[in-house]
Length: 406
Ligand SMILES: Cc1ncc(COP(=O)(O)O)c(C=O)c1O
Image 1 (tube, rainbow, N blue to C red):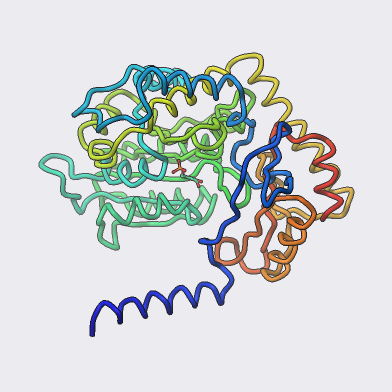
Image 2: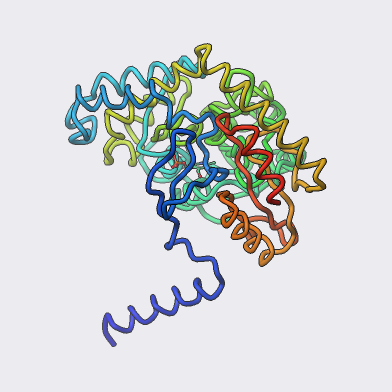
């Protein structure tokens, strides 16, 4: 027995993944973008319907210029983690700006939203008084279809089985049941949910979720704390791009976001009351022991946040909404069926069978369209879909071509 036996195990595992046609390692290589924001692959142009850049900000001249200027001023990389090397002004400015964007007291940046979830859930589940160990009188309650980063964030918290509960997907009566049943058994509860669910474009009713949590806050000695990850909602959804909170009128205690989707830049963040943010700065491992994103990226993110609040941003949000409506209208007229009635740029077209969904995505590719097939177990059996992501930058011609290609 030696390493070569282990390598055989790895080969077997990769062969199994390849046989199941679920491999992710041979992704397409994009050589660049045209002036109309089409991707160039193998010298050919493709309309991009599989990107989270919902407002087209990664191609925006102001955002790109801000990235270059911040890189010029501060250098390409951060040099070290913030408590060792010091904080660059651009990171500070971005924290202040994203906190005010969400009308919160404070913000903290992480290298990605995934890195946020790997630390934040754990931090707010820690024991109440002594040390960094998770006490066994805290409970985490999670939506059944939360993102992988939340699932892993709960895993690293090292809880016992009885400390982890799941409520049925978007069923807040079921959340109510879980909170009612656990009174007297735990000191504190952390409820965690996606804002927008990325496979289906549907969203949690955050107002109702907060009302349910507030109802039980006084029933637990240390209350009920809500963490919402609105990675796909912010800068995509809502009249002014404030995401699922704006759509539902809800407000999470701890809101997680990313600059890597609608903001067209990169990196994760948390906004909350200052006490929560101060505590994360002292205890979140992926903040303390990991570099912040580069100053150029921070400059781009700052420009993107400012842009969304400008007339240009308002126009882009309006354009995004108009494109979603146009696409839905044409698709329904063309006889296409949707898995959900999404109002978000994520539009799931029902195919119903995984082989067909994959074949359809390949056909779309032959027609110059990038869109992703999503199959079981990511979506329920029979709900296999083509996930279309509409951008503010799509032209009416591209939308027409997408529908006729289906
Ligand atoms: C809900 C949710 N959280 C977190 C992430 C990860 O974001 P990031 O790329 O900033 O790590 C994603 C992206 O897939 C997501 O959908």
